[in-house]
Length: 265
Image (cartoon, rainbow, N blue to C red; front, side):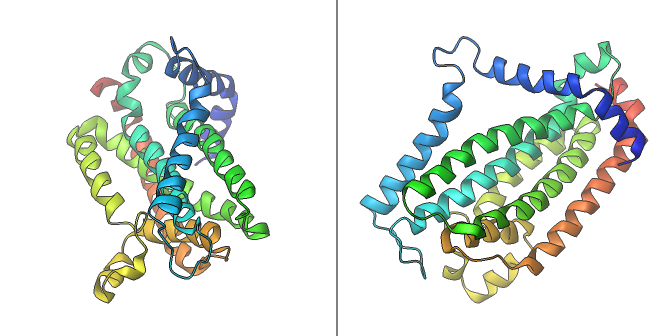
């Protein structure tokens, strides 16, 4: 991203923060419990997964002694996948959803994807904060290894932003992109070892999984949180390179077609 774009985003930081605030307000408008739903929904998911898989089904994660092992493995994958899916899904539709705003007001177009990422990160911070609290209360907090999540999260957000902006620009000109990605995202979830450990798959399937960039990311989170070990950093390098490639591609597409986006909406 050029310095000019960064300066423009900084100049419009009030607009971005206001947009994030309005999104939260509109999400819970006319709701009796309001913002409390931000806490209730993820908390109920963690409680349900914990009770069902650790207490009722007695599901065990291979190599992990804790009875909460599989529940933590599942929550670590689902919560971080949710962040990825939210950034990419909303990023690909952001220019279409704000078509009227783009036609009426003049502001840096990149404020829109930045608002999407900021909103998703606030949501994720609340949800993951509750999950971390559960790890502490249940005595399964992994210790200092926990902070290895930060670089993994940075790699994931770079990958999601790059893919979201690229799809967002393409979706303005080719509306099938958004429809097709919704279908792909569903297959992508089940082709990523989130609900099941990759070790239960045949060797050939595990090799093919190596081409799925989300396998390395989800595996890193699950290794840190469920096993209390550092992830395979080398496995994250190709994902970082791919994320940077998508960021550069998305920005190039955006700069090339920024003037045509409003006409196309």
